[in-house]
Length: 43
Figure 1 (cartoon, rainbow, N blue to C red):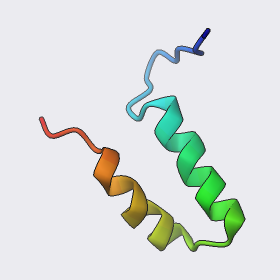
Figure 2 (cartoon, rainbow, N blue to C red; figure 1 turned 180 degrees about the vertical axis):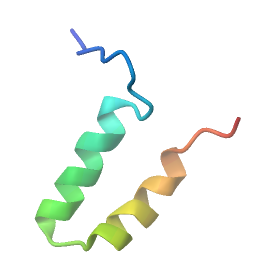
Figure 3 (tube, one colour; figure 1 turned 90 degrees about the vertical axis):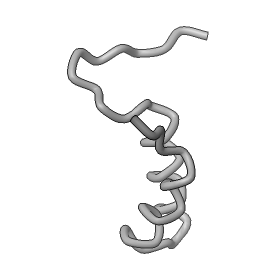
């Protein structure tokens, strides 16, 4: 699968797409961001 690479991309594409999907399903931005926290990598 070809993946688009952005030079200054801090967040992986799949997380961004998943959060947009939840937003368009009706979640608020705040609730969508809370749901994506499980994908965050600890540094």
